[in-house]
Image (cartoon, rainbow, N blue to C red):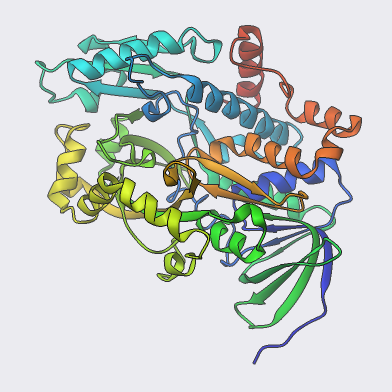
Length: 496
């Protein structure tokens, strides 16, 4: 039997105990310590969904090796604008994390971040030409000045011996390497930030708690109806500001808010799987993140990579991700998530996207029906001498790609993250996936600008933000001195 308890009032309500809510929560308590914050999480653990190490690519998406961030245009030129933006955002994230470590709000950086080279690897004449041109374009900018490029077999063997071992010497190959790459366990980082938040006055976290409804009151406040999944008790929270950072679960919650800005948004779920190496001898022979080019029709989040990871203090080796299809919006969600998200205002964009993305549909069907031998064949493009018994299939996280209205197409599929805010700034939701966690600091700064615009212009907040992020309101893109200084400072603090 359910019971209703007394309404509880707070300043800020954060839905979802992942990297985004943790980042926003820390920002708000740094900028305005007297704020009261309640975090709501439906699972019994923090960072159990998209932020978890096994569910997240964990590369520290800095655009060093992800080729989908530097597309080739019709005139054969390479567009590096997205790579520059993401690399800049990642530097802001590193400064934020360094601040938390330096201020002893996080005990040790090694629990969540480690140095690991980032490598882009291609084969075939056209791809070699592309990578050579990409390197030339990126190294014009300070953020990528240290990027190495080589087509020489003996150099590539030193960079990635397992990848080159047994490869056909008659095929042209090339690679770029960034020594300054990182591996990040976003689950551990999230838990460290929430541990700090829980030590502060005015912060509480409700685990095993599900949001049932989100209702705007006439006075501008929000009523959040919640249910304890253990006791089945129900209650209401009232807050001035609500942030929905629930990963794949954000879209259904955003729809419950009924804000006009959410009209027309839909979601397309994509599941993932990894091949996990279980042979310690193989794992020890590889020490890099090696990214290639995505297959034709593949979503950007499915760019194949051979990935050295540090998870729970142990070195791991993963390959993938292999895409699949599930109607769930969360790994721990319901198979009814997709159908229940369909409403009158988004059904046309959803149908339009389906009609205009048939290659993607075919790709997902092919991926979902692959045999172990099919996956081994894909792996052997990166590890020519891989054997099936050294690898096991593990389930990765669930992603929901954003679908929104478009005047020309009816609906378009967005690959990236998108902030949807109420007109009065009282509610914000984060939709989408990659690059996600790596750019969480820049994304949450955008939320603050949109939802706390008056406070963001105050001298107090401006001074504090520059203390937390020394490069705040400066540009990394062409300022070599700023890049070098920032990297030296943050790498020292983060023990990289």
